[in-house]
Image 1 (cartoon, rainbow, N blue to C red):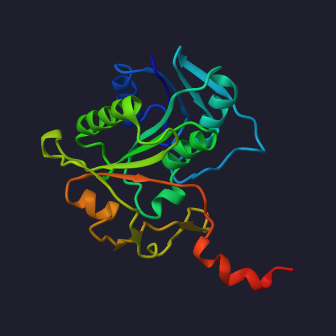
Image 2: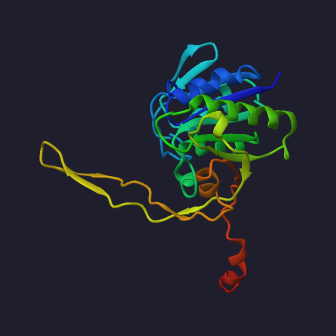
Length: 247
C-alpha cells in the first residue's frame, strides 16, 4: 500500500487537514506531521536558531512547534523512518494562486518534500471559511488516487486550487499557468494601548493577469486549477545579456 505524508500551514487541528487526512486513509497509509499553530505565509522557512519539539497526538498524528517546511524536513530526515510515496499539503483555508505560491506555507511544505526527491501536491480552497469542504476533499482524494496509479511524471510539484462549490457544480480539472496580482494593499497602521505604532501587512491585491490559461481564470469559472511548479529561479532568457560581466 502506498504511503503518504500530509502537512499544512493552518495547523494540525485545521478542518482542511483533518478531513483530508481521514479521507486519504481509504487509499493509502497516511501520517500527519503538521505545525502546532497557524503558519500561513511562512513559505520555505526552516527554524535554525531554536529547538523544535515533536508532540504525538496518536500513532499517526504529530505536531511540531515550527513551520510547515520544518515539519516535512523533520519527517523526511528521521521521524518517519521511511520514504513516503507522496507528500500532500493542505487543504489550505484560502487560495494559493499567482504570486501567493511564493509566500505560501502550504506550497512550502509540498516543496520541501519535492526538494527531497518525493512528488508533492499542495491543495487549497479558493475562498476562506471551509465552505463545501467535503467537495474539496473528494476532489483532492480522487486526484491523489489518480496520481498514485498513473502520474505523468515520477517527480512533480503540483499546485491545486479548488473553488468552494458543491461537488455537483465543480467543473473539470484545468492544467494552467500561474496568474499575476496587482501590488498588495496598503499597510494598516494602528496604535496600541501604550501608544506605540503597530503595522499590519495589507491584503493581497486583485488579479492583474487572469487570462484564460491562468489559475485565476480557471477557478473563477468553476474549474479545479492544476499548476505544475518548478524550483529553478534562473532567468534563462536573460543569461546571454549578462555574459559581458564574466571575467
